[in-house]
Picture 1 (cartoon, one colour):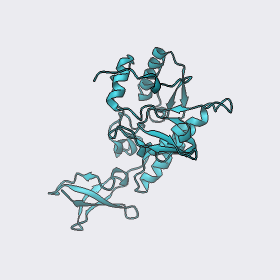
Picture 2 (cartoon, rainbow, N blue to C red):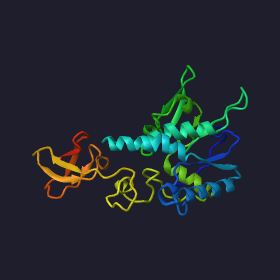
Picture 3 (tube, rainbow, N blue to C red):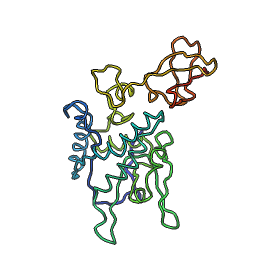
Picture 4 (tube, helix red, strand yellow):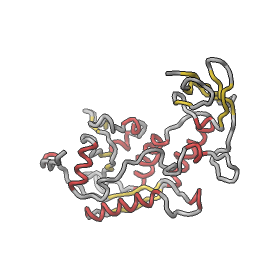
Length: 271
């Protein structure tokens, strides 16, 4: 795809500065910050800002994240519920705690905006209220993860990528020779990072390794037969609707129910 420079009517002038959120402190797990994922991200931010001649700063929100996202998620996992930490992070941290750290508008005639890289769009109603709209790129649309943010947070937000396709964003980054133009996309929950399986991060069967939740074994029951077909190590490892690999079952099984009181996972065969 050949990049075409935007025409002037697509451009707006802003006094820009960048901010990087640090949401997870790996010292809680290993006692050291060496080699953690956030350092590489912070280095990339600084490289881009240096190229664009933008001021940038790091804001440590790891305590806010722990108290407002991670601990509430742990309680729900223990209860057999499947929370969505990414939705909570947007509501409580990016459009919550972070905005509390950013300067407010210096005067009645000016406005301090908060631009993010989310694929979403925003419009104003006739009554002056902000409305969250789906992004142009249906595949990358992130409005589901933004649906829980406050109207006050949304009103300060700008989504410059909302009307662009992911491929166009890549071309823009290459055109401006950004050092992150070829960077792979980040996927998954931020605190798990590259540590491996989610279940191994939350709870270890090995007693010599730290666990946020101790293992809590229980039966896995085939709902079609009523028979116990396996044993699970914790309800948090299963989400209703997900595929479950069960040894001995001839058909592919899916999780259909979780009983927190009985600590039981129910599965059923399906196509």
